Image (cartoon, rainbow, N blue to C red; front, side, top):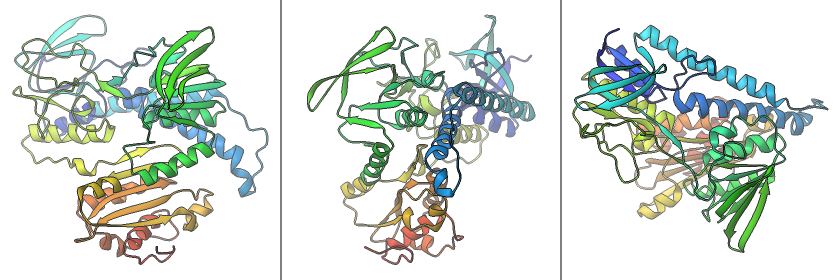
Length: 475
């Protein structure tokens, strides 16, 4: 096997494997190194996203949502489903099967594109060399004209609640729970905490979410956040804001949690405690001395707007660099770097990176929140459409939430779109495309949307921005 390549990618996650495939499509010789492996020892490219994040969490969210609908919504459709129960072992088996199929699919893509897949650890050496340590411990030195660092991220640990891998677990461990806990504690009310909390609440656990910040979903539009909190509380999620955890101790088969809030010192006893306070860049044993690659004060690899590091021929993408830790952001960075290496045009518009929370109802947004627009001083207008007025949503028995569009008052530029409701993660794509092409709200108003569809909510929200909505009352 050759030890010299045009491109070596360290990391086979959602930023690394697309970079490798695109580089190969650009007729470059490529090797991609990753450490993940399946239980049987086979290669498991896909990083955290496929192995312990996006895909397995969505599998469990889908399964638990079906259970919830069978128990609480089918009756409204005239479907009798008495005695419905959950088999957690089968649910986990299905999830594992999906993960393995997807990871093996990446290997098939590599083979078709001509990418050399290497299972093991990659470490950048000076002079655009990479030390590859295989799974059996043997080492080789690879040389490359370009190296792409795509090492990803790892869950952050809370000093006051250290992981023990059994009772106090991270988000990865929360995906492997083999029985429904009677009471589950979740530290962190962000995307990961809400999704994991939703899974186990639907399956029957009592779930308490401890969020240190005083505001719920502070990164989201606050009108949307308030609507989301209302629905989560209705579903039985016990969300406690301004709750700063001061300690967590395993005692027998439970965890004793202490925290402070506006009322003072508080305590909580749970069967399991999930710590989901965010993620940090994973750069352990990634850089040898003398590479010239620098890290910032938070541990992220320093890059410019085009994902170049300060070392010639060394690039970095995905969770290990600045910007939102989102798989789709990393994927676009990986593809763009592979094109830049090949001398082609590349572009990543960070202003139109969408965010999605796969709870029920789903939450999605792109662009600026109303709070951000207001703070900028720019005059704006807002259009909203409730899913209660959507015939399609009512037919689905999922008429919760709304679509909200914010546009500039002067030139009608779409500044942000926020959706909470059925299939919000799919609906937001129209808004992303519109903003990518600098569409105005009038452009959306004059775009024909099929009826009856959920996408009409975006259409009506655009109309409402000019008080021209047809299927809802203009306010």
